[in-house]
Length: 255
Image (cartoon, rainbow, N blue to C red; front, side, top):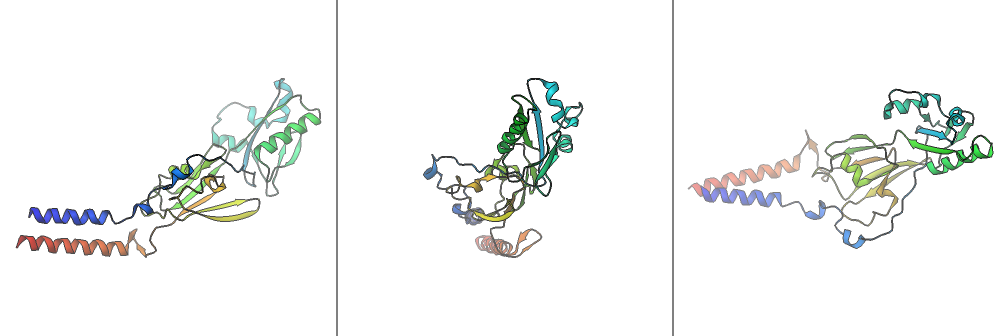
């Protein structure tokens, strides 16, 4: 009986080792890219973005008329309440600021918009040496497929990396196809679909490494076989065969 248990254990161990590490490990050639210059693609403001814009100056009373009055009121200041007070970018890519009026913001970076608003305030003799602070309040990405916690996630940073986004979702399942992650991005009126291989590091200095607001990440299963009830039919057949073979061996050793 002891021999049969040992035999069964060896078979199960062999089965669990069938998945090649080349299909699972991330950044397998990372040593080749241990020191590279970082190039980041700055996010450009899009319709439906919600912006928090705060204008200040050395004389606080002078800058008050240029701010959304609800921003200066007390009370709850969490992100959700700030969204209700923020400036929503219209379909035309515009916002309307107090006193300054309508400003086109579409396809401008946050720093471009800060520079433009400061210029309008100074050149129009509105404020002396104004300070302008802008944040995007509704930055989010969606991740679907073979991850542990699919869904839509918000982030407060200007941008995050794709590995960070996968971390938000609890990493890929063992069934996730690491060699072909889909990244769907809409920017400047153009939708692109990018294919990413997580097993290599040769794309880490690519714009795809940085997640931008409204990106969609799709992690497909690593097997094209039909799935029923969450179980792969092909895998079930293999497991069934192994169990049957193991039981046969146990009876054989008993004789």
